[in-house]
Image (tube, rainbow, N blue to C red; front, side, top):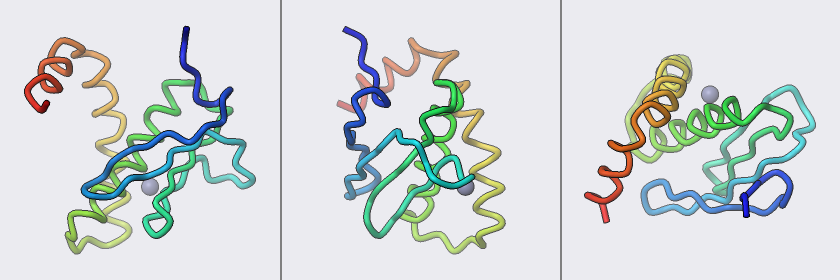
Length: 109
Ligand SMILES: [Zn+2]
């Protein structure tokens, strides 16, 4: 059975460092298509986006969380530039290299 987050509207966990985030695919009320809250440990991604866009949005927000967790002192502008540059490339890397991703996951068990 295919798993669809947005139909189930269930929160799924995502770990960033020692923190566990609740990920929701929802109808967001404003124009911001995604958001991470590093205080409440939540990530929301708009449900109307096509799956590949949702994937990039989720990676985008995860990168914000990773940078926050890293403690690096980068300006908001620079952080956004880094995240926007990397998110679609990481998504493409994951999609284009399934064997390498499987091997990486096997090595990290
Ligand atoms: Zn951002």
